[in-house]
Image 1: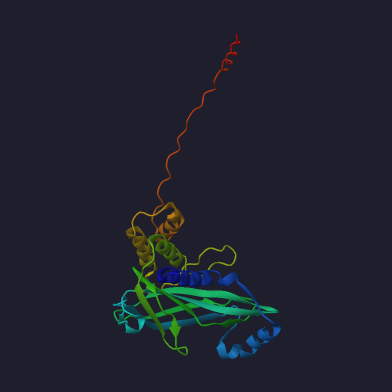
Image 2 (image 1 turned 180 degrees about the vertical axis):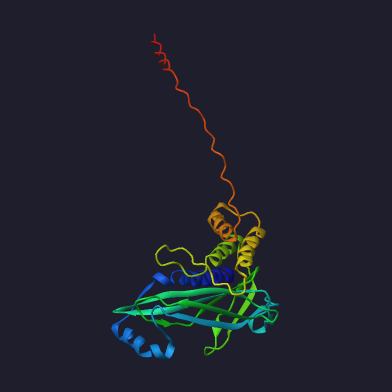
Length: 263
């Protein structure tokens, strides 16, 4: 598998895990379920229906010399990168645990590549929720996320490199970024990202503009482009007009002449 395809697969899998977090059931043995209850106080137990809030901070870098081996990369702070944070949790149930997306919010890095994204939400009613470490996704036009590490609950660090994805793969990834966020449990529709910095509108527009800059795309990308237009508030192109052709009934055709008798 090429490096571009591997990067695309990693990003796609991470986003699909986030998108499905609210309906994903993970079977657990009863012993594992009991262990979750015992450690809940240590990792954060959210009272049902109560309001909660948190913030995630960190720094984003970009590589200026991706042509050299990775251990020789030079990283500089990446300004203007969009950062999406998903706060997630686990609801322990008898015999299994359910993963739930609690809240998602977006922010942007400053001139030093630093960010702080905050959010608040009400925990699901009826069951206590054990909060998990938040998931952080970073996007900057023309780049893709290379690393994903966090040291001991400290600040998040992400590294971006220039994207080498084919146009169709890139637009598919942009479409998945556009659909990042929690989904309503009943309607499965995307819940609007929390936007304390007021950057979401520009984020969706940037995704659409990057897709447009990729040039003509195959019909296989039509669905992804429609998603990007919808999230950016761009009107969908008009469908081609219907062409009606009148087919008039035809009279009976004359019978074919009988073959001539042979002498």
